[in-house]
Image (cartoon, rainbow, N blue to C red; front, side, top):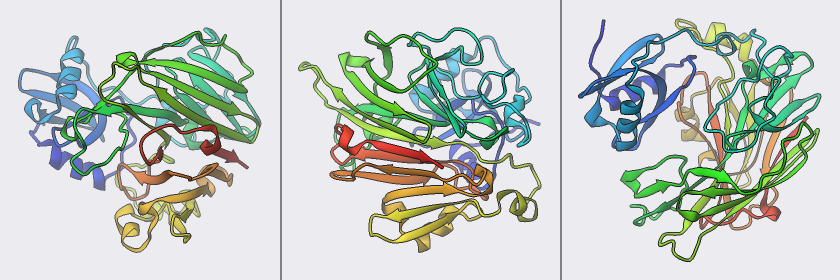
Length: 377
């Protein structure tokens, strides 16, 4: 049975219920709030999306201009919701890059780099396979980190995703922020600059180590990326270069996104989650120097009332059963004139998806001396 529901109410629903469907498209309302869901169909006044096993009908007028355009582009031919691919359906599915017969799971995007072109890494420019993880540069210019524990595929074979946010403000942010978002936010006068290509990229390689890349962004802006990968550590840094004709300077940030750690089934609760999640948690050092623990079986909204991590952190260590007892340490080389935050988009229970956001306080260059480092033990 179909029903009409406004996007703000739908966002409240998503904030209190977990879902395990494959994330296909981002849908943003005019207030700038975003959800991810599959597209079903659209007409002149509505957009139907599919999530959590149900169809939701949104008013087209409630969506941002970008989401309205997305709906128009997807409306022909109409699509129907399909079952989620195997890699997202259950924690026991072997679908990570450690499986020799399967291509790695992960977000795609427009290919703007030369790729290996064959094998399980066909859509990737370069890759480094190690005993603890695989790190690969997708043809879209996004870095993927797949965690492994022997033959076990962690996080259901889905990657941690590393990429830059880059855009500009046509007018000052209403609150004076220089936050670099990953999508256009017209309500904040922020415009995202897309990557349109790379200048003289290196040849594709299955021995990813050190990389220097120069991406071309919209508006004639260039983005220089430095990257290093080894069997234990990954580092990334970058800066943008605006041509003199650019009226509004580009702001830059690094984003590291951690996927859903487990598939939450409808009707399940704490009794089913506790033995799966166990001691999985994030241990952070806040900017005030406090050492705080963020258990996966806690609600973000409750934690923020008693902890200070939302004000910024110096480092984070994610560990526990869901991560194969591995420790993933995330920290800048230096926090000089910069800041790092850990946050959640869903605030669900249990804690499903989170991201780290690292930026120079003025929105400028993240130099090599302040590079973001990831260590896997």
